[in-house]
Image 1 (cartoon, one colour):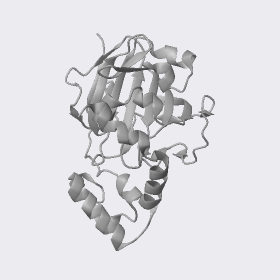
Image 2 (cartoon, rainbow, N blue to C red; image 1 turned 135 degrees about the horizontal axis):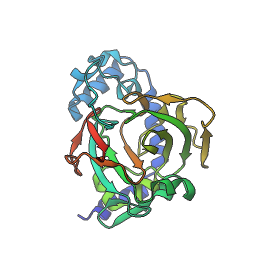
Image 3 (cartoon, rainbow, N blue to C red; image 1 turned 90 degrees about the horizontal axis):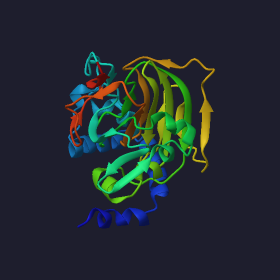
Amino acid sequence: MSDRLAVLPQYLLPKQLLTVLAGRLAGARAGRFTTAAIRAFIRRYRVDMSEAAEPGPQAYASFNDFFTRALRPGARPQAAAVLTCPVDGAISQLGPVAGDRIFQAKGHHYTTTALLGGDARRASAYTDGLFATLYLSPRDYHRIHMPCDGRLIRMTHVPGALFSVNPTTARGVPGLFARNERVVCEFDTALGPLALVLVGATIVGSMATVWHGVVNPPRPGQVRTWDYAQTPVRLRQGEEMGRFLLGSTVILLFPRGGLRLNPDWTPGRPIRLGEAMADTLH
């Protein structure tokens, strides 16, 4: 079956309704029923709970608590690199931005302007730069951390669709990551501007940041922007910056010149929070 045929049912499903329902279920505190469901999820997705700060399923009052579980201290040491990996997951795609075009999958591209919510001026900072698209599966740790020190400049919530973001859907839905709902976080760093984009998906009930809390819901259906240029929100490399409820995708954009991505990083490769992502060119 072709990828386009495989994703056809997603065009027909009531994705927004499913996401709202999933969010309500994930937030429910149903005692032993919640614990039993978490146990089943751990078995189904082979979640390694030995890495969690609270390894016992009974420690979590809701699925949301479980999905956003903390890691035990020392579980993800930070590499000595200019950029470190911000998540656990797998590499979907990475490499150079071709002008303003980002590679999604064979035959599919989208633009930096579309990804950032339509602002061509801001997107121009990443012309001919670098990108990395990182996929978080349901079994992964769902918190996102800073790849380097940064000062928050702006956050934008861009409404959109809620297609799945798994590899099959990335191959079958044109412009997937610029179509789905997303939260764009823009930072000023020693390396220049950094865009860190949290992309929503079907049944990803919400996305949150450490400085704002839950960004969505609400979902008012229009672009919302928060300006932090005059507000001192500074985060250090390795600090948590946000989280997903369940799993999704993070896209990072870097400006042209000065960085070399880890040569071991290739599409499909599993990655872990804190490993070396990139260093400066010498």
